[in-house]
Length: 342
Image (cartoon, rainbow, N blue to C red; front, top):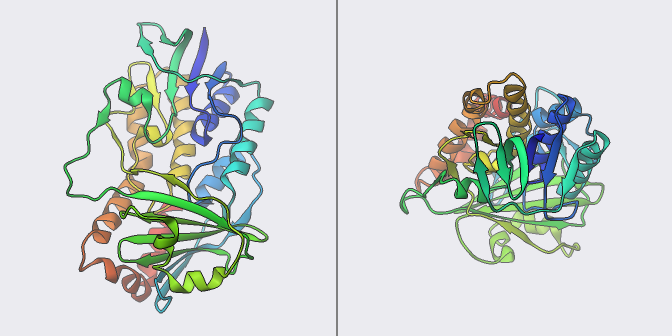
């Protein structure tokens, strides 16, 4: 019987597998897609995520990020905050995934091309489509089939909050800044992340369902920087907000987006996933898997509080236009908020 059966071979699942292998566990990862797996995301890693990758022995190629800049749609008002705990990293999702997969393989982690559909729990183990394990780690993403099959999905609370979606495309243009730039307009934000010598990724977070080019038209200054640069196909994800009733259900533990997700507004998703993966393995190694719920809540508290607060302000018609001016007027507050997440 294996120790950890990880369902989902994205960054959260592979980080859990690496932590498990370093702890001396026998780990198997189930992932039906080939490596590397791409995903619509901002591709900017906070300094905490960079440190977590270093601790795992994972080196991903990318562009150092000095901090974050907020701008209004026209670029007339802006606010900047530098990271105090070292640089972040702009890295293509495919390169990050390939680096994590290589490290997992180096440590002897087995990856099987399988999609898990059924999970059964017993006193001493978990059965998942014919595989027996002491514990199962669900790292199967935003719309986690494992979470849904165990009845742990929290239904959306009415229609008071509009659903939000993410769209991402890459442009063949030399980065013009070593900051992640966040452009704000009515109903959407555009995140610009340098990821290569001549490549930037632009992710749009929006509550309006229309084409990517129509979304980007709300940011004239950003469009002027892109010109006729070559571009990749658009990838999308959403609805973004997902809640889970718990992170621990018997011998099943959840990590990454499968553990619950508020929004990509503050860009801390991957840092939280990497940190949670380490806590999950620590709790299992110490024979206290139930303690992972409290550890996850502590790790994610700042992220959940700041993201929900900012998202609430974003959804208030009178407050939303004041976000960038307020950040510019109170740079100290803006800097502390950025570095609390970093």
